[in-house]
Image (cartoon, rainbow, N blue to C red; front, side, top):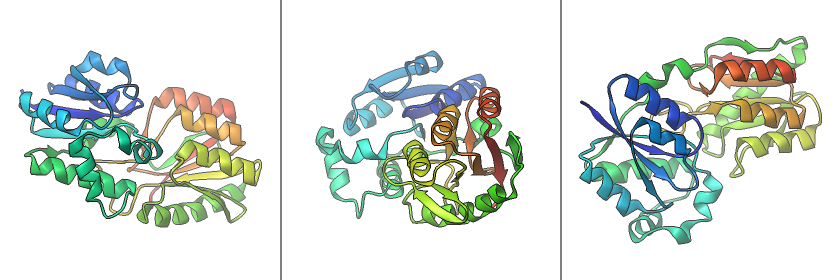
Length: 268
C-alpha cells in the first residue's frame, strides 16, 4: 500500500485530501499542528500532533513511519508564522535564518527543498481533489449589472500581477478602482477592508500565481469567504477556474444565493 504523509494546516482542505486518498487505498499519516489542524483529521489516518515549529520532530516522525511522499495542505497564517519565530526549534531557526526573504512562496519552496534534501518528495494532490476545482462559468447567483463583470475582468488582471509578486492572491475593486490588495492579513480581512473603504457593491477577485505549482498554496474559497463578503456588502466573487479549490460546494452555493452574491470562474 502506498504511503503518503500529510502536513496539515487549518481548514477543510486537509480533511478532503485525507478522506479522498484513504478511499483510493492510500495509507495516510498526518502531521497535524496543535491548535491549528481540525481534530476530525484523526478519522482518516494515524495522526501525530506537533507544536508549531517542531521541524526536527516532524522529520524524525516521517522517517520513523517510512514515508517518502508528502503533501502540504491547509492554512498556516503567514502573519502567525512571521511573528512566531521565537517558537521554532533549532532546526527551524537555522532554516529561517537562511531565507532571502520571508514571502509565502519563498518559505514554502524552501520548506520543500529542505525536506527533499532529507529524502522526501512532494506530490501533486490535485488527482485527489479534482472534484473541488472550480469550473469556468457561473457557479452561483446571477449578474444583472454589467459594471460588475467589467470590474471582475479588470480585477483579475491586477490580482494576477499581485499574485506573481507574491504579495497576495486577492484584490477588491469597484468602478475600475483597486480598493484593497491582500497583504499579510489574509483574504478575509482584505475583503472586509475593501468593504470599509469602497462601500457596497465591491468585486472580490482571487487568482493563482502564474504557472501555479499545484503542490502548494493553491487558492481556496468557501463559506467563510462568503461571510466576509456579506459583511463587506460585496456583490461578486471572481476566481480563477481550474486553479481554485471550492470547499463544501452545495452549502457554498446555497449561502451565496441567500446572501445575493454571484460567483464566477474565469479562465485566465
